[in-house]
Image (cartoon, protein in one colour):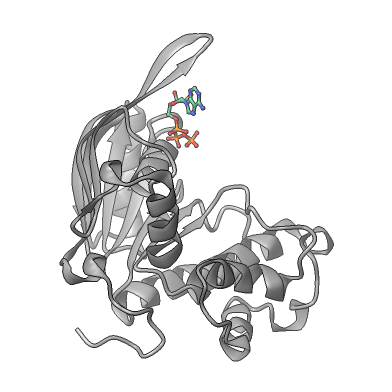
Length: 256
Ligand SMILES: Nc1ncnc2c1ncn2[C@@H]1O[C@H](COP(=O)(O)OP(=O)(O)OP(=O)(O)O)[C@@H](O)[C@H]1O
């Protein structure tokens, strides 16, 4: 596969056809109410250059799966690998470095810094990863999500949907090996939502990035190459190249 010139220098992570492997992952939260098993023996490989939607009823473990796959939380059991690198074998510093160079995450709460402008928020992760900030590329990322007029605004001066789009521009600008997004279209109107989904699909189809997106919306999931269904912390189904009607039908079977 050819790589665009703007991608970071390859590391061992980039040589594998598999972007992310979840190998027998279980994750249990310990809270005052007791132990909550959020994931129970999840095994899955996310192939490089694919776009996967993760669906399932509320509380089925979708966000946990994303957090664990992105190395934001260490699983109670099992192994996560990014390419050939086992995340469990890395120190916190090594993990942070790997995450900064290879992954981007669009959170449900957008995690923007209020003190920085939209432009500065988009540029920040690249700066933290020690890369030179290409101003034109930052502006282009903001243009792609329709915010070219708002580059100087700070998050408190933007609507929820606009903040969500800044978070998406920030992830796209990094051109990460793997892009994780938790409900990235949740706060968006139909047309901005569609645009964002097209951008995510383009990231995988055109640039060979791997995209993993949690969503409740069958229409959003239909933009992905495949959809995984979670229930009670386990993968209970998978659809390939399905349309929104098929995805919705599978979801309603699960929710019965
Ligand atoms: N920090 C936490 N402490 C204790 N339990 C948690 C914590 N985070 C999640 N859980 C529990 O783990 C289970 C899975 O949660 P998770 O957020 O992964 O589900 P989800 O499928 O993303 O849900 P939703 O669609 O409602 O966002 C739920 O039972 C939830 O209550």
